Length: 387
Ligand code: N2P
Figure 1 (cartoon, rainbow, N blue to C red):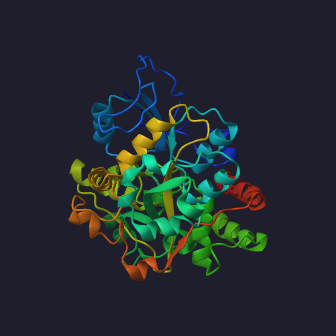
Figure 2: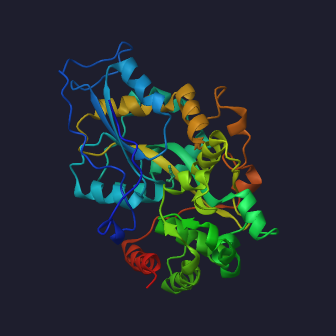
Figure 3: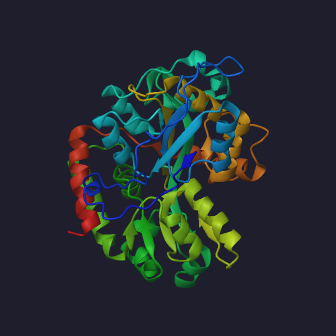
């Protein structure tokens, strides 16, 4: 089995165009196993080549789940990771990725469906669809009408992840449940010395700036974008780096004290800090002004070499006990109805499963037009380079 849990990128000059970086450095083409005819013991059809090539977000699965799938079905999992929708999208639009299962976020999925990147799911091969939360499926249908091409894997929010002691020491009344932590220069300046990071996710971050400004997060107005850019340029001197996965370990190790991060990733940082036993406490809040939510989905590229195995892998992830194991480990809310195997700590954590009054203030990240994306990419490059 090839499990490549790589989440850093170096010298990403090209990726700067789309402001992302890939954790993956090889194509999943190294199968050497002998093909045999395909069906599982339970009768589910499989491809003759006993391989499935999966491209998922980093830090987004319990590693033993991959091993268990492989053991149960005798299908080798080539597992690669990324931490940027833009990187995934560039690969998908180029084609011939060799991937059987990929994990685009909803707004990107929507435009990729339009571009013909995916095949329709064969729902007969996904009996565990019955475990999906119908409300979540309806919400995700805004990106994939009829849920024809995708299932929800996890759903997420973004917000401040922070080292409670370091923040308190520098600002006892810090607005830790507000976007002001990042977007008010007089606030973020106080934390520059202990290290601040932002997600390298332009569309999502811009939506959070719009919420801070009291503007519509769905806005595609160039004037609103200019206002958001002004906010970002004003805080740039206080931001140590812009990256979408490095902050997990850095928060846990005390290398940084504040990250605009994704809910479960910050919770993982909390767990890693606790396990390291150095007295670092990491916390996460969904901002009181309202947050930005997202759905990460599972879909099968149109040219997937092993689509039946891809269906089988997706169906496996939808099993209640497997979905719960993943959520318990990665600290994200999955797309299934809450199951008995979901730990109380995860189920009752308002940062993972926000209560209804908080959910009501979440704005799903919008799908951006090509025109807006072009403007946004320029804004983001200016922000990242500070010019
Ligand atoms: C996993 C991050 C997934 C959330 N580390 C971004 N879609």
